[in-house]
Length: 174
Image (cartoon, rainbow, N blue to C red; front, side, top):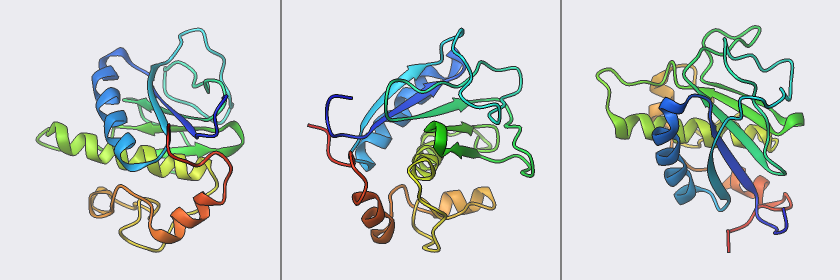
């Protein structure tokens, strides 16, 4: 990586989502002290985990060091979970978020960006080793339903932030 700053790549799995991913990255940058970049999935990239399965989608791959969170419009096929918003694979430093259950009806772009921002940060937190948090305003609080996602905040609570601060490479981008 070259610097001591955590790198988060947010990967668009479908070209139609590029604008949304860029907007979400702008929101995420305001919340976490990491280097956040929007990327497009490479069609010929190799899968990082057999457990990551996005219906008929390209594989998810991390870029360099850091964390990759892939955004897809397709449902996630995670054994034991029905229509999850996202799932993290800490060993591979990868997470996947499906916007399928996050789309507001009627569609409102700002609300969609806010929901997706929360899920991207939440899954990145899992990749870094954070469990679900009991604090209902913390981004790491478990969302059993969309209402839970809307009710929680976009940032880490003091306890989760303290746990993250103990990790190497968690700092403000220069």
